[in-house]
Amino acid sequence: MLHGDVDDGILTLRMAHGKASALDLELGGALQAEFEGAAESDDIRALILTGTGSIFSAGVDLPRLVNSGKTYVQDFVEALGAMLQALFVFPKPAVAAVNGHAIAGGAIMAFACDYRLMSGGRIGVPEALVGVPFPPLALEVVRFGVPQQHLQPMLHLAKTIEVGEAKSMGIIDEIVPVENLLNRANEVARQLADIAPANFRLTKRQIREPFLRNAAAIASVSADEIDAQWSSPEVHEHIRAYLAKTLGKR
Image 1 (tube, one colour):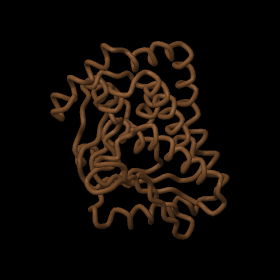
Image 2: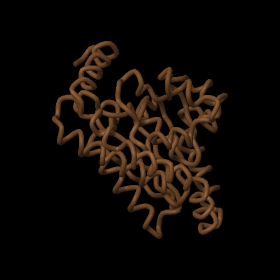
Image 3: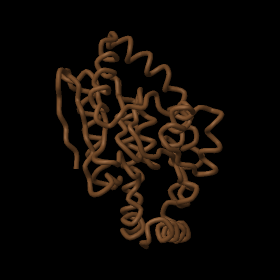
Image 4: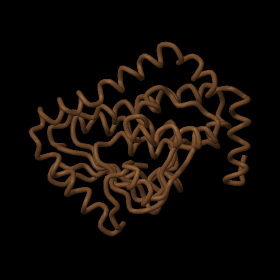
């Protein structure tokens, strides 16, 4: 599910869960535990998050979501929020080594990192096509990671974009050939880790705190509506139609 390797204080965490590292209750919980453990460990100076093969992460495991019942959906949405929170507030450098497609939740994990390298594939948040609303923090992470002039088109048009366009839009920081992706990610992680830790931690918190406050404000007025939509039979039918159209499965 997750493979971790530490070299000179740099934790490389590789997602390897099924064919596409789709997010489910188990992967979300495992990621949260790794992020929180690395945050607390004196032996970890920085984090690199990557995937396997040609996919970073395909986002939420939608077939499981619509076939597992209301309790699973509620537990999953809570776990997703907790995982994103742990990554977004991670007090040390976090580098996304995006080895391929990063869709929906996969893209949001990349957006939550401090620096994003990508070797190929597509990245974006097609939630509008899928038919599910963004949980409050997930939306704020997208707002954090996507330049303002591109935010609404990406959200409303549910666009996924190839790596060159992502670089030109400022969504990723570097395009790196896949064979050099982890080497370059390690260089960046070490460069960031060399910043005085207290300085980095404070600056990162100052940059991100407004987005956390926005997420809390949205949750205070919309959490019940968002949760209801995730469990709604109508929304699940929309998801099934999306799956049938894009993947040939229901």
